[in-house]
Amino acid sequence: MNLIRKKIALGIVALMGVTSAFGAQARSYPDALAKAGKSKPVILFCYGANYDQVSQETYETFIHSKNKEIIRALGKESWVVVPVFQEPNEKEKKEYEKVMGNKHLPGEMWSLPCFLIMDGAGNFRGAVQSKEEMESPEAAATALTTLLKNFAVQQKLIEEAERSNGENKKKALQKALDIPRLSVPGHKSYDPVYSGLLDKVQTMSIPEATDTVRKELAGGPFTPLERQMILATLAGHVRHKGGSADLLRSLYTEIKEIDPTSAFGIYAEGAIKLWAGGGNGSAPTQQAQ
Image 1 (cartoon, rainbow, N blue to C red):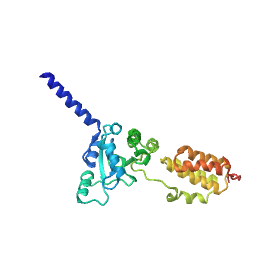
Image 2: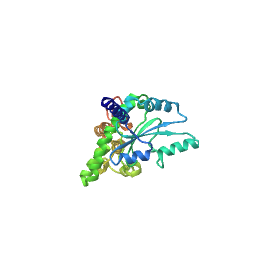
Image 3: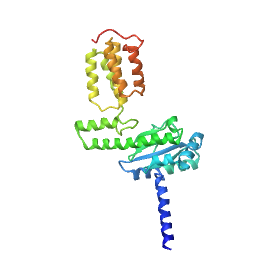
Image 4: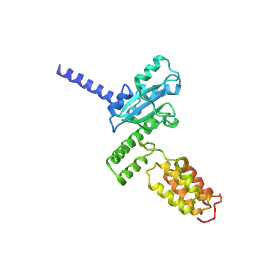
């Protein structure tokens, strides 16, 4: 009799282990936020529930069938399935409201199906949503695992910045902003056009513009893309003023090294060949003014 009881108990424990292995699925987004607290992520699996065949097939393959790769990637994090309806009827509206409450999906979601990474305060932090990433459970799980690991690193840096002041705060935030494909809550996007930097350097000599841009960069922190944009402002000015090929090559190389995969990084590689004597294109010969 005792042996039977032990087997039953072990069976219950094993069943609980299987259930908990499939992450900490919450009934609603507000519930998941409450459980996650400040430092943990919330994962939203969003799919087109009543109009998108690809989304429905992905839901079945990834979630409903409890794919082992997706299970492993979700780990023990709080996660929610969000059915997104097109022209929903009353029943679908209620289903969506039951999941989302009074919360809204972030504007950074641009494709379905997808995994969105939110923080405990409801801030968007990152997403797995490209066609290539979502085409298979293995690809999605790999991307999701990487984002969640990077989330943990970034969150520690953000909390370090919150405890710090002055230069230490700035350094921690810069490191947090350098984490690929993850946003830092509260960071205001910088654009050289809207900030006035582009207009400011147009009337300057190359040395003056260089000094102004370097001071702007030192005043960060900025995301890698923002640093590329600022440097591209200087590079464009140098080219317009007939600056040296060496200076252009240095600037475009710096832009490329920040992130060679971004639009600015790819452009910089071509610009080195075209404008800085790195290929068959002609480069300016005038020296910096």
